[in-house]
Length: 151
Figure 1 (tube, rainbow, N blue to C red):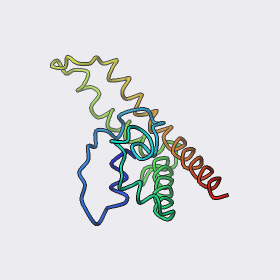
Figure 2 (cartoon, one colour):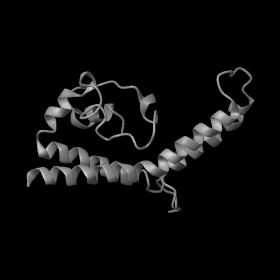
Figure 3 (cartoon, rainbow, N blue to C red):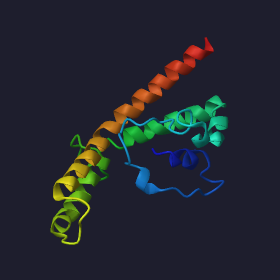
């Protein structure tokens, strides 16, 4: 879930907030679930979410929703038999397979090679395989840390 996901989670019915979908897979699958909330420069932090997270039930709603998302990407695609490959990885493979030959044959592309393209598909596949566990670990760490503050 990218930075804009916070707004989508907390304000879905109140205010439509546009966001740049291209940032979804923009960096390592280990990026923080609290990106621009409690990390990074003060000027980039999401003040609305910081205030909302002062309410335990809203923070828990966010964490529980992240866990649901983390679980969902590992589930088999709808209608497909369980194979150990989640729907997100299946979708990366499906789309890559659909456009691979056209991409390889495109004479107008100058910015990247076929090897670059293959590497990017590997990155997306790795992201789909690893993000869930990384999100679960971050949620668990946050809950342990928050419970230590209450003691």
